[in-house]
Each structure stands twice: as C-alpha cells, then as structure tokens.
Image 1 (tube, rainbow, N blue to C red):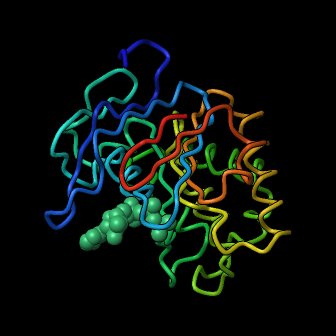
Image 2: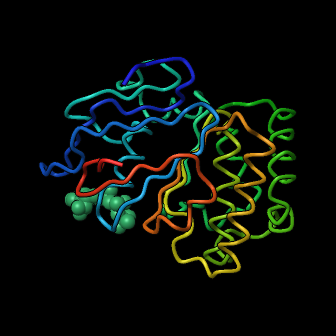
Image 3: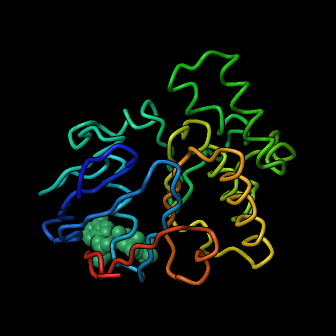
Amino acid sequence: MADGAGTMLELDGVSADIAGVPVLREVHLRVPAGGRVALIGRNGAGKTTTLRTLMGLLPLRQGRVLIDGSDATAAPAHHRPRMGIGYAPEERRLFGSFSVRENMVLPAEVLRLTAAETRRRLDSVFELLPELKDLAPRRAAGLSGGQGKMVALGRALMVGTRAVLLDEPFQGLAPALAQRYAEALKRLHLALPDVAILITESNPELLRPLVEATFVIERGEIAPA
Ligand SMILES: Nc1ncnc2c1ncn2[C@@H]1O[C@H](COP(=O)(O)OP(=O)(O)OP(=O)(O)O)[C@@H](O)[C@H]1O
C-alpha cells in the first residue's frame, strides 16, 4: 500500500506479539484523511491491539505505522495528541473524582494549549455533543456507562483534530443511547469533515450506515473483503 497523500492513518504489514504470542499478523489498514472506517471482528480478534499499535502503545515485531504519510513507528504514544490523534479506549479511563469538564480539558493541558484555544475546542465539542454541556459539572464517577462513552468521545475530540480512534463505543449501550451516539458521529462528520474516524465493533450491521469502508479482522489477520 502506498504512503500516498490523503492517507491519515496506515498500518503497513504490522505484526505484534503480546506476552510472546502473535496477536497481529501482517496487518494492512488504511484510513483516508476525513474518511470513516470500521474495523470489525469478534472478541479477541485483535481490534483493540490494532488501535493500540496505531497509538504507539505496543511495540511492533514487524511493519510500520504511518501517520499523515510520515513514519510514526518509533514515535512514542504521548506524541499522538500533538499529531492531532485522539483515542477513546474501550474502558474509557475517566478520572472518577474529576468533573466531566476537567476530564475533557486534561488532554488539552497535557498538550499545553492556551486557555483560549482550550475554551474554543471545548465550545466546539459542546456544540457537537450538547449533552456533554449538561454533564460538564458532574463527577465522572457518577456517570452511566453510556454517558461515559459520550465523554470519552468528547475528550478524544479535544485533541483529535485530524483523527479519532474509537474502541467499541457501542458495546453495552442501550438501543436509545446507541442511536444518540450514532447521531453524534454523523454530526461530527458533517461539522468536521476533515477528521478521520476509525471505529471498532463486533457487529458489522451497526456501523454500515456510518462508514465508507470496512476492514474485518480474524485471529489477528485482516480478512479479504
Ligand atoms: N495482556 C495480554 N496478555 C495476553 N494476551 C493478550 C493480552 N491482551 C490481549 N491479548 C490477546 O490478544 C488477542 C487480541 O486481543 P484484543 O483485545 O486486541 O481483541 P479485540 O478484538 O479488541 O477483542 P474484544 O472485542 O474482546 O475487546 C486476544 O486473543 C487476547 O487474548
């Protein structure tokens, strides 16, 4: 696969092991700039591991990670926000004793954005996900699972000016909440068409209306489409 312009995220023949066991096998995956891509696979297929390699959280045995056409294989995870990459892990990782607003602002502080820029991004995320504005003063520990997923999306968007990686955001959401989350993703694409979205899920039907391309992973290998 070429490094070509217009590719935001790419895994080029990536193999990775966890505890000595091969978990990813020569994975090729490409997310165009502004594209919406689904990564579908059963439990344990390697979806989370694929996102973690893109985030620089797992050493590769083989292959390359390209971000916006540049080789980021050796760039540490903490450089990703600077590259405009946001990540909402499956288990959300919110700080329970912090408010929703504080959780959202944290990555902007780590990036040392100015107060004005942080405010601007926060306002634009609130505009996109209005329910976060109401939740902003609440302690994260008191949120429902679905509310937490929405906050994790908002937090990823605080730094994800080029791409966001969303790990199984629909997992465990009641149908009404899943519907709201899907609508938020549609609004996100309309409002910020340059932000690429890579989203994992076990059920391919759920994401079909939301994405332009789908990759299927089985036992650490991308299955032929
Ligand atoms: N810390 C670990 N130690 C050993 N094996 C691991 C570890 N983490 C993941 N694995 C293995 O790596 C494989 C891929 O796991 P991964 O979490 O990427 O799958 P997934 O597709 O995201 O699954 P799920 O839908 O259950 O989240 C699985 O077979 C899993 O057992």
